[in-house]
Length: 116
Image (cartoon, rainbow, N blue to C red; front, side):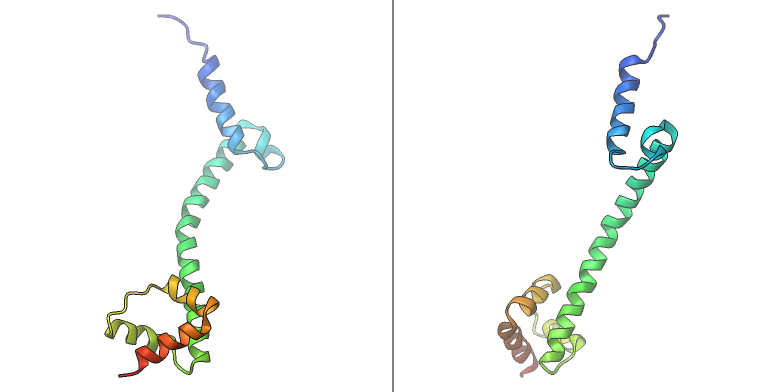
């Protein structure tokens, strides 16, 4: 069987990992074992934080909607309850955007859902 010296394949794999480690400091960027550990850990953190990002934005939207509700004399939970009762399908992202950029329109939504 022919001898394999792993020149091309290993270099390609190594260069790929080192490219991901660009911007790291000290031995996390220069030595192979530390670089692989750090790159794999960073991929794990990136996966987890992609999930957390969704949670963080939802809580931000809820805080903005609640602040706008309080300015209109109601509570966040009452607004969401009334929207569900009237079968209004506006998600929290859109409601928060309306609350920030169109306060008059948001107050109209609050009045319409609270009435009747």
